[in-house]
Amino acid sequence: MKDGKSTKVNSQLQHQNGHLPPFKLAKLFDPETSWDKDQLGDVLHWMRQSVALVCGLLWGSIPLVGGIWFILHLGLDSYGQMEFLVISTTMVYGYYAMILKVDEEEFGGHGVLLQEGLFASITLFLLMWTLIYSLGHF
Image 1 (spheres, rainbow, N blue to C red):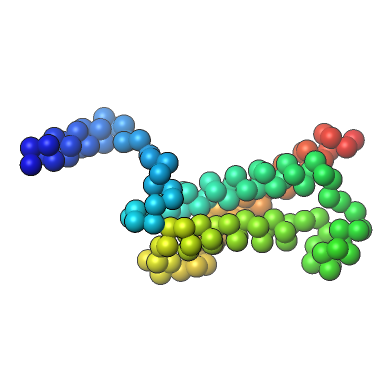
Image 2 (tube, rainbow, N blue to C red; image 1 turned 180 degrees about the vertical axis):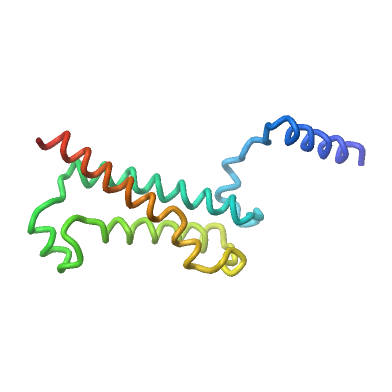
């Protein structure tokens, strides 16, 4: 009982001093962990940014440009944005639905969770893709 009180007091002191307890990496893959809306939103946002960075680097270094990609993508797009959206959305959905097994209705539904970090990641993807392509192929 005394140990539980000291833990609570230490936690309160850390919050008062502006220091938060360390975020445990194991929490990211534990379906038993409870998440609040802000925490899950942050994790999904940064997950999507990571995917955008990797895909932008990959697309720019290959390079994926030109009419052949337009034909291969069946006219959906000519620059690879659709593939990025499919990859990042699939990863985000798979993470919260299959790994964390959260009830999406508690967080506002699939639409809210799938849009978390979407526009920032598209911007990062296009920026990295253009930058890497321009630096490497011109």
